[in-house]
Length: 172
Image (cartoon, rainbow, N blue to C red; front, side, top):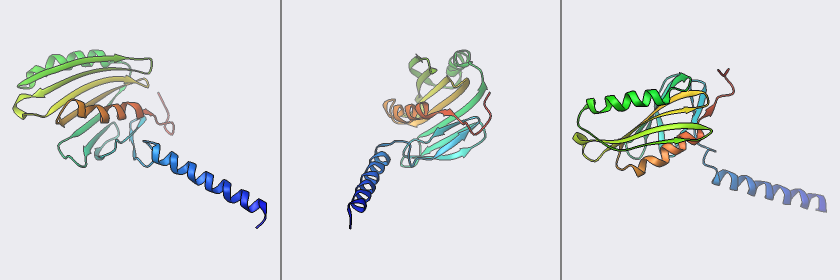
């Protein structure tokens, strides 16, 4: 074997090693992507799509069947603050609810308004409602059936971080 074949073999081994490290360290490679109106979202690990429309998506936790994540595209525009205020006013009318925390996050990429609460008749299950302005659309995200507020952080942040326009479709 001459030196050219040895060089080709070394380059091939280095390339395969690099691909292995990229695949093992990337959170999105190998994870399903779902359409959500004119955007796409990567499904978090341990979740699977249970129900899917053109403008909404329901995700179930495969290992814990009571944890769910619902995402809906409410359309073009930045209406998250007014929708959040209306929902926050109507929330106590839905039954015996204890509001735990209410927060907002405003960055150049998105505006997020979230309320965390617990239904006292459900025992120890926590829920959250979020309205978010991102990529010129308003999104509604509801997480329910979680055992703690901290356990909501990973799937919520994963969805928010991977939500992006679907460039295969015409954008607004």
